Image (cartoon, rainbow, N blue to C red; front, side, top):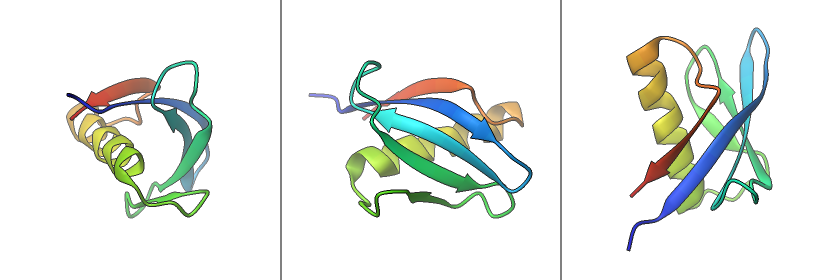
Length: 77
């Protein structure tokens, strides 16, 4: 069975991009902050789990492909 994680960009500033994410589009209750310079992310609740890692990896992969921070997306693992 695939694990799904959805994400949506909440804000973008000069140093960071903030995303909401979760297991369904209607339940994106967690947030992560992506450092624009290092492209490293951190979960704002401190919980480094499978959902956080999948969202972070997919956001970075889309950035690699498009050279811009994605507005929204999902990952299936």
